[in-house]
Image 1 (cartoon, rainbow, N blue to C red):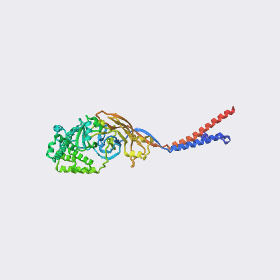
Image 2: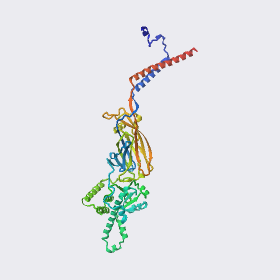
Image 3: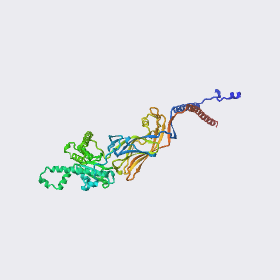
Length: 524
């Protein structure tokens, strides 16, 4: 046994006298050294380099809800009609408009004013409860509100300085409720004109009065009318309403000198509307004395008609003057475009189940016109998860795999424009929970990121359905883990030994082959 152990020698020596050096061997030795040094440098660099490794696992996220952050511009939708709803398969249906911020935009997409936070569509009085007569009863003595069609609308704009038009639809319930109030407002304006004519005639002599016929009286009334109260049925006059971009019923629109000035959005009572007309007249004719204002006479007549007096009338006057002072302080350059937009920004909490959130046009005070509703939009930002996660990723405060950097908010800066009626874009989002090593809050809390895989398509709506921009989401049951891995030290040492031994052996085999080939050639 001892003899066998003593005979074990893996490093036997060859006598120096038996070794022969050659020029070829020297060249190959230098080549072997160069190869070993190169591989040693590359292997050392690889050892000190960390690599991202991904693993697919079942999603064990214990969060019951997740946050969706969005910043979206509706390119042709008023802020007052833009609402955001969320729906899940659990049956949760929630309106979250009150928890977002909205900014009005003009037709060029320029933000004009802050619309406000926690802004619900305000509740307004839809009709004047003090008007007790029905519409039919008010029409027994003739209809005072002027009925317009496409041609007469143009005539009215050219003829009258102030034209206040109710664009309505016969099927609209809000329009039917407003009809008696609108006719009463027209009667107030007509009575005001009649009283002004009578006052004018009181100064005339008896001979002139005898020559003054009924037709002359009606013509004089027409000339003295403070505001022409008119109405147009959009069911009958579709071309008229489309050219004037009537998107909801009823739309109460004021024209001054043939130009669209503003839409009335206040309480739909006779007095409120009359006071609003006074404000618009004051803004249009700043040098007009209040005592000389025919519209002011009409507002006073409205109060008498509706029997408002005493403290209540005093309070209304104070509110009116306060509002007018506020109007005088506003920027007179404000000119709302025919295509106003709305930027909607905020966040919402959704259940970790399939569902959707959507932006649509809706109003508690109007019936909207489906084919005039355009929900074309620009997605400035759409991400899921804690906003701190997005800030850390975009700000470069955490290292993440380059291949997934753009997958956390892939829809950013995308535009979705529809050019046809009754169409809207629907977006389908597959949400993948992502754990990234080192993604932690400042207090050390582990943060989760969410990758979004999306597709978008245009959806066609029925003629009686209002389009909506819809974002349909579904959370994947599989999560992705990303972590950095570095080679172990023993792997590094093994590689170095393999480099040295392998290079030495390969070069030695090469040299032996060359030597054998040359020896065989010499023997020939």
